[in-house]
Length: 205
Image 1 (spheres, rainbow, N blue to C red):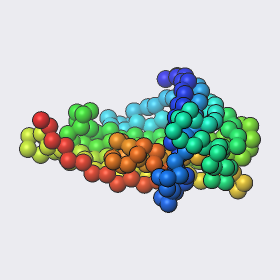
Image 2 (image 1 turned 90 degrees about the horizontal axis):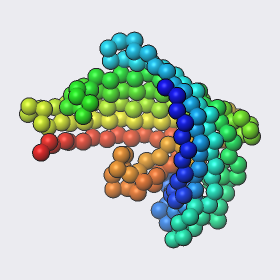
Image 3 (image 1 turned 30 degrees about the vertical axis):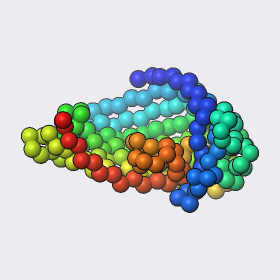
């Protein structure tokens, strides 16, 4: 498949880096980006696919438009928000493997496991190249005629940068929101490494 995207997020939240970041340090930023890419995959077994891709990514970060919050440039600098002072264009190479044994896709049994390795090559500033590994493992177990489902999930993201390089804050994994930490504000926690352990009990009405 080939694809192109243009996105604009005028009111994104930033609280700082790591688990010690404070909600009181919330700031607002705007992220605009353009992406052009292509991916290909091959099914090597009934439930196993492997593939790869190539993307050209153009991010741009600026102060946000939420008047109720301080803008990111007023509260943070390059040390506390890496990538704030300059945003290069990236050439991203991707390799992934996926195992999907869910039945049905609104799963009641089986599992979905995916690992993706990406390298972001800074094409302009030679300062923000990095490699990122994302792993997402989900298992579903049903009982009582498949009307009750237990779901367990382990997701992890880690990154590596060479000497003299940094990972931009806007490309770091985040935790918070309805997909990860329910009851916690979206993008509440952000950093170069993240781990999520999640369990759900699903009851079909």
